[in-house]
Image 1 (cartoon, rainbow, N blue to C red):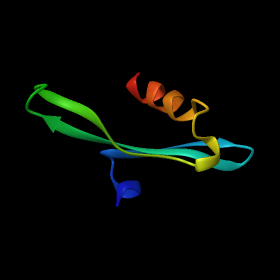
Image 2 (image 1 turned 90 degrees about the horizontal axis):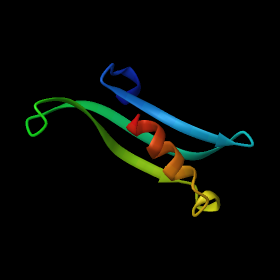
Image 3 (image 1 turned 180 degrees about the horizontal axis):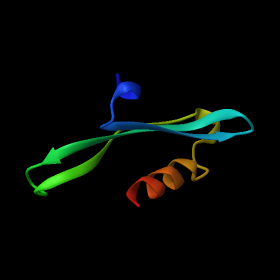
Length: 64
């Protein structure tokens, strides 16, 4: 469903050809913000990459 929506994106960070981090971002209307916002819905970090900053790197990228 997300891959077919123009209101959502899936982001994947790879290291050595393997997925290290995956996150989904959905564009939704926020009544609190008064407009469209990006809602980070899911963040999954592969166990072997936890504590190395790759999840934070992806979240920093999504905030821009």
